[in-house]
Image 1 (cartoon, rainbow over the protein chains, first blue to last red):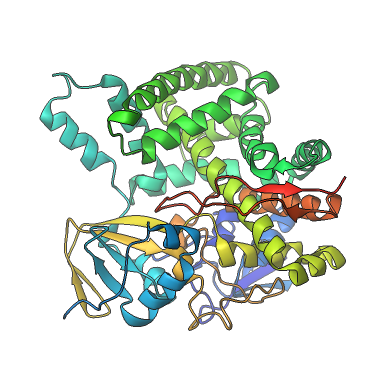
Image 2: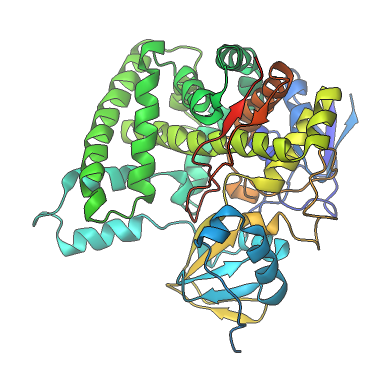
Length: 65
Length: 408
């Protein structure tokens, strides 16, 4: 599974990081540091989906299952 | 710049009952307002409150300076060591810390709040809610459902015996009294009693921690003990963390459930909609948190010169981030005073933002979703039995009681 963030949409709500701060790291200002395309470690797919869904502005995406 | 002639007292009976008119006037006419009444800056626009969460001139560290001042005065001379210990305990909370201390505490606590661990609590929370809702035959929905649930959930997550749950509720109340209570002679005795209660809590958590070190389990306390990159929480920090979980997770969640239920009762069309479309519960809870969330005001302490919307803000001053005003800003939300359970996107900031976003947000969301869903589903005859009154509190949006009938 791969996930990514659109930095133009991210508003630094930090709700993804609340779900899992390792899968969804933040920079010093609270913006997502997931990057445009990141692989989710095997077994963490469920958490990744919860984190993507937690974004209130849909800046996060599941790129491939 | 002269101050605009508008009322800014957030604690009048009118503002306590319904602060949103006052918030709208401040937001429109004086969005960065020096309030002589509150001796603080009031930020009421969404963009300003949002930016404030990232502003390094605005600090969260507001207990340690107080403690240092008390020590400088010499708390030994007629001072209260019990109060100092409680202040120390509170001073270690990550909610009153800045990076790097905050970063470390947050990292060490985060493992215990991981999404999967929280999701796994769903079944247990549903059972607790069902027990409370099934036994409810009308009366105060807060004391019977919204108040007992969160303390029970925290006690369960920490792995405390069921028999001890009532004490968790008492400690939570005592923490609130000490953390927010401004004292005064009439309350001094209650304050002292609360401090004694908290010493008992301190001892209780220490025993629980020692037990869990000997016999690790699959619970949150064991997860909090786990080392992260060679670092781990000390016993003092673990006690402090347990107290924070109890304190931060209790009243706010109680108020989220109660305020959400009241908002639905006041908007029968939306209540009917949620009953017809129960799958709306997730966006519904986001909207209910936006519409009348549990926290009105968060505090920041100014530690460096900064400027907000052209107003100069100086070190030593206080800034109130008015979350409830930001969440009704028409610049961010279309028809902000309309409750729309299907509102999307809904970037409400009831849980704060960025690195300080509430670490328990997922847990609070789950508790509120399950409680509200079950209340509307299992209590079809739910109706207000009395006009509710709000507590005169600056920080929280909190009902005295929520008296309802359930028609059975």
